[in-house]
Structure formats: C-alpha cells, structure tokens
Image (cartoon, rainbow, N blue to C red):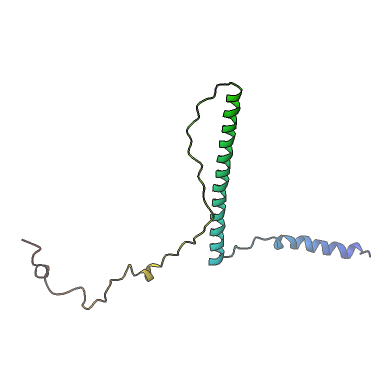
Length: 136
C-alpha cells in the first residue's frame, strides 16, 4: 500500500510537532504514606545489605591475611607483626521497625494548660497581697 506524498508528509509533520508535548515533564505526585513507608523500609534494607557486604569484605580480608602469614612463614620469610584492626561486626538478621509518627502539637496537649481556667488572669489584687512572703 502506497501513500501519495501530499497526504503522508502532513501526517508526519503533525506527529513531529506533537511529540514534544507528549514528552513534557509532568509534576511529581505527592507520595502517599504507604509509599513513604515502603521507601523507608527499602532504604533500611539497603543499609543493612551494605553492612552485610562490609562484614563479608572484612572476613575475606582476614582470610587473605591469614593465608599470607602462613605461606610466608612456610617459605621462611619474615612475617610482619599484624596491625590491630577492629573486629568484623555482624549486623544480624534484617529487622525493620517503622518509626512512630509523633503527635501534632495540638494533640500532644503541650500548648494548653492542664486545667480549664476558672478565673480571668487579671485581678485587682496587688502582688504583695497575693504573695505575702515575696518581699521581706
């Protein structure tokens, strides 16, 4: 099936001109609390995996150093004294505890007095009468 150039070219031109609007950047949607929790769990798992990788690297380095020392001693070469390094730390199994969202200030009651006011804060009483022992 062939198309005459006079109908094919305008169609291609229209597609080419419409393409930039199809690739326009859309605004990022606000993440839901579930998505935030999933992202936090993924970040925690990635941090744990990095600790496991560090443990495996540390153990491999210890094995290589021990093998070098034994082969050097067997060959009669002088074995240098080992350098003190921190021990390999096992991160343990992965356990994720989601953080607890703090209460908003309004719900925490931090800004409100414990009891309801029964009298206005201003009175006609003098301070010396209200607190007689203050000045002596």
